[in-house]
Image 1: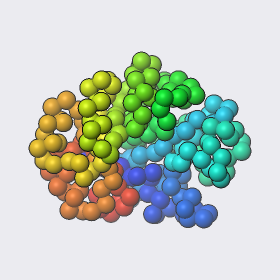
Image 2: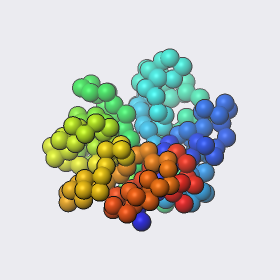
Image 3: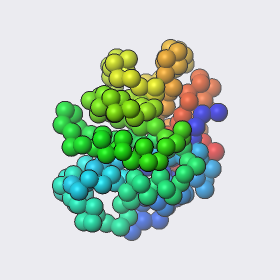
Image 4: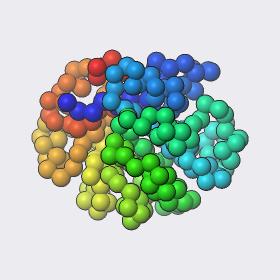
Length: 216
């Protein structure tokens, strides 16, 4: 059976004020596990003062997250360290948000944090191939390449990744078979039970969903 992960937790089951703030929160992650999932996917940014925080968008209130200090953020935005401490047994896919080619030191900050919280249930992914190169050079792993265009797959052999994370519609049974010769495969975002069952039968290693009931 593939790993079953909640997309930014299980915000559909969490309570937020307002509800749109429910994703990527401690409550959403707790709800994902209570619903029977194995873990969750989350998104990480670096603040101006060097704190890794869990939030999807590159901005908050119209201001770039890397231009805000941690103490300026709302209480519902957790640090990555808080999440790792709160859910030590969960499978967690950490998506590092990054825009190539620039870096603000987020890769180094993530390497330091993960060294303090070693776990064989955590892996890091990114759409940014340069971020993955930097992480690999820092000894961070396992790593996964996120992509929604098939052409991006050609980058994977250059990046030292153990995972590929294609958008689910890119996969066929033959493609999964070919990818699994070299990689573990995560499919996102899988919100139909029939699709989840099909991908599992093909041998996909992890599924990410917005709706836990689809996978449990």
